[in-house]
Length: 171
Image 1: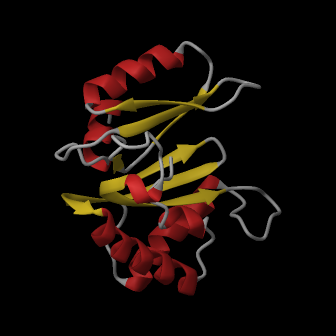
Image 2: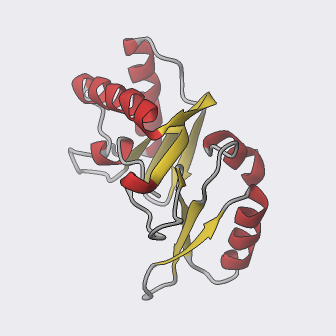
């Protein structure tokens, strides 16, 4: 799947607001650009790719009219729930390999009786896991589902960054 197809599924484009594209060049400070359409996101990412920087995007749409900040309070809508699972051999809080992390996610889903993820993306140091909704959820609706998924994963013993799953402002 290409970048457009992926972003069309994981971001709530059918509502007002903007997503954050955040980037950092080696040794530089973090910067953010706000995009309200998928075309503006793709243009921004294409421009940033040539700069050899780390690029991140928010999954929430934000109302930035009053203070222009990426905060959970400014998040208005989401279309996916997500995990961040790091991999580091020998670290008991992380999986030793990408394969182990992916297998653990699918075993978790099967054990608790939830659908398999919509996407599993290999990140620089692990995997990002996304469950996409067919409908846009308000931040409050999303938080209920995200909290339930986080609790189930924690109870199951999944090794993941639990703070990410319920952080609507996360990139």
